[in-house]
Amino acid sequence: MTRWRYWTQHALTGTQLHPALPLSGVEFGNELNGPGSLTGTLKPHFVKANASLLLPHTALIYAEADGLLRWGGLIWDVTAEDDQYRIEAAGWSSYLNKRHDTHGQLGGRGPYTYTDPCKVIRDLWAYAQEQPDGNLGVTVDATTSSATVGTPAEPWASYWYETPVLGDHLDDLVKEDGSPEYTNTCSYQSNGTVRKRLALGYPRLGARRTDISFRTGVNIIDAPPVNYSGDDFANTIIATGSGEGTATRRAEDSVRDGGLRMESLLALPTVNGNDILGRRAAAERKRLQIMGEVTSITVRDHPNAPLGSWQIGDDVPIAVHNAWTSWTGWARIIADAYQPGEHDDQAVLTLKRADSFHYGSPGDI
Image (cartoon, rainbow, N blue to C red; front, side, top):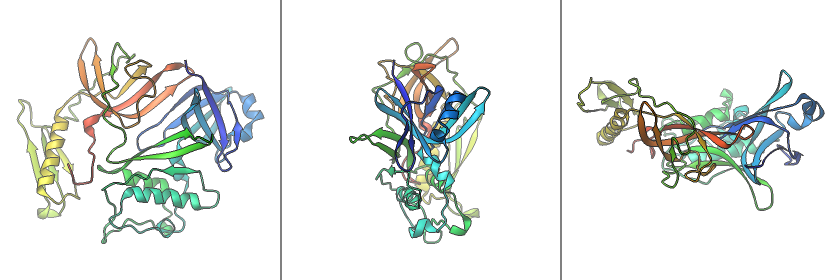
């Protein structure tokens, strides 16, 4: 059984506010391209005596097990619920949702033309943290990508008079296929301080893992449903690329598989080549023609995949066998969740079919 500790820190000074919060009902986890979250409850008498240690905009909170940091973020809400106080926190990237570009072009760093979005993400954080009382101490990976944002005709810009939210900028930079990906992490450094990190990955976060696996009756402890959705199925893809009206580039990939013709549209307005468009249509058809998906599993600590042996973004092999179906496939971990007080040796993994993702520069296959 792991030994858990929850402690708080002043967001600006780094001073420890409380070494061991008596939290109960804790649940926390990280996610792909999002901040992740932590929730837990405290008794009212503790909050009354230590209210200054939990103030939103001041306090950071960490989850630690056996001397290793498993999660860190900002406290956003402390709410009375019957005879308890509920704490809600979110990871480092949530801070950008309360920050705006008040100078324009991220303090003169933009506008951007044919620029690596990884650089713009680093500039977002540099701008946010150079403002008075804005330095959260987050470091951003030096990852580079072959993706680009902005053109001479339409530069990527941030205008002060629109008071853009920096968090919205971050979301826009990672939302398209072929964009970099991120997650929030933290760890102890050799000098005992905490490294708050935005982990950037390109062409992806995580990796295809052959060293760990999840199987019902072994380390999957629930009975996860396998969904076969006709809404998500297609055996014909109609892809459109760049251009307008009759000049729009178009490709179609279709197979006759003994069932009804089921069509799906794929809009790729930045793709200029018919060969690339055709390959993307074929890849999308192969993906949508496969049915069956497991979207969540509850797993226990096991040699096949010890808790924490995965990373957000990993592809992992899943095998589900029950009275109704047998399904095996690769799924990508897009979020995890731990409940140490209730199930110390368990975690819930949120999954998406691994072939749902397209990696690489926009326009590439």
